[in-house]
Length: 103
Image (tube, rainbow, N blue to C red; front, side, top):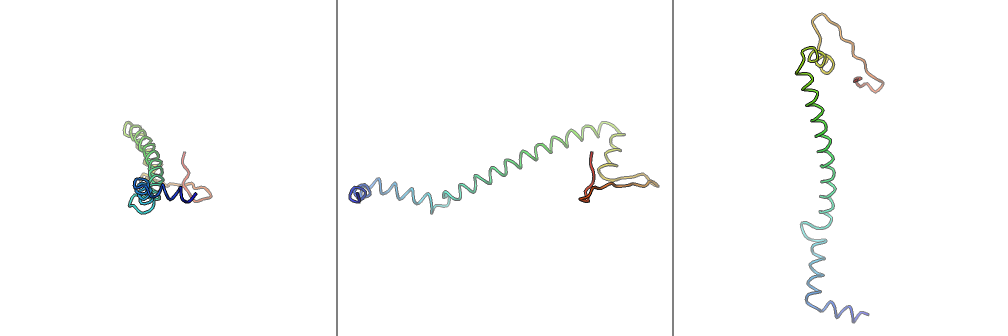
């Protein structure tokens, strides 16, 4: 058994290929562990990109609605930024977690 294995390892091409495989798997700058980490990071960043693309679309739609009408612009400013007219009182309603309630 060991003689057969030793005979294959004595072959220059097998030994070189095995050495290269070990080097690329464990010692190279782009080793297997680094590749797996990069793959997980890429998946995480792709998820973030999808989230932000959806948020951008939502904000663009909201922007088109608000910029088209003065009454909607005033409503938006009052709800999102708690702006008020002079002499007017504003009451902010929050839930148990101390967060603003949104529609």
